[in-house]
Length: 334
Image 1 (cartoon, rainbow, N blue to C red):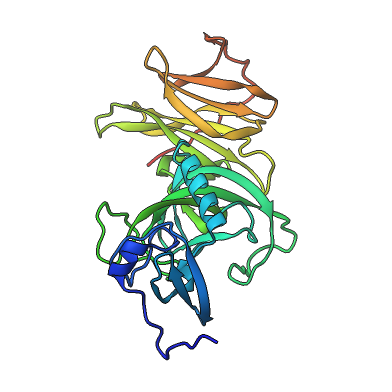
Image 2 (spheres, helix red, strand yellow):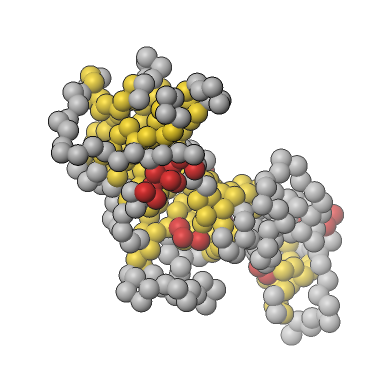
C-alpha cells in the first residue's frame, strides 16, 4: 500500500521541466515551468491529488485535474488544429464558468473550464440533446427543451482547469510565472456566451426578433463623424436546437444623408451552414459565401455593390428579384 503525506508534496518544477507530464496545456499555476505531453504513471490518489511517476522516475503529487487522458489529449490537439483553420464567425464572453468539451453535448469529455468573462472567438455551431449534468444544471431551462445550440470556440487557457474564476477577461500577449497561456478550442453551450454583437446589428436584430448566430464587417464607408462599418448578419428565429445553422441573412449599410443604419438586404427561408466566408472580389467589392442545405456542392455567393447586395452565379450578377408588397423594415442606428 502506498502511503500519502499529510500535505501532498508538489513535483519539483525543475525536475518536471526535464521530465514532463501530460497536462492540459501546461496549466499548472503552482509550477513556474512549461511541461507538455509526456506520459506519467499514476500510483495513488488522495482527494484531488494524484501521485505520479514520470518516465525518468521522478515521483510526486500533482493536482489530478491537471492530468488528461492521452487519447483525449490527442483529440484536443486535432480539434485545435481544425479550429485554427476556420474563419471567425463572431465573438463573445462567457457569462458563467463554462465547460469546454471535445464535442457537442454535456456528457462529452471536458477539456477545460473557462472562468466568467473570458473572451472567445466563435467558429461553428451544432446542436445536441439537452442532458442536465451536476456541474451544468440550469433552473431556467424549459422542460420542453429537447435540443440546444453549441458553439465551437477558440480561446486562450491561462489558468489551471481547477480554478473557476479567470484572472483577467482581457487576453495578454505576455505570460507571468505560473500563468502559462496557451490556445485551446472546443465546444460550449451557446447560451453561456454573451455575444459581442455590434450595436447597429443588435438593434436591427432586436427590431426584427432575430437571434444572431454570426456577423461580419463587410467594409467601411466614409462619414463626417468617422468611418462606418457595414455589416452582414446571419440569424434565425425561434428556439434553439434547429437543424439549420441560420435561416435569415441581413445586411446593414450606413445612410450618410440620414446618419443611420438601414437594412439594405434581406433573405429569408434559408438553411445555411457555417462557416460563412467573406472576402473581396476581383473588383474589390465585398463578397460573402456559404453552403445552403438545398445544394451542398455549390456555394451561394453574394456581392455588396455600394449599398446593394446581389447574388452571383457563374461569375455573373443576378437581376434583383421582384419586390413584394411592402418595403423592408429599416434598422435605425444611434
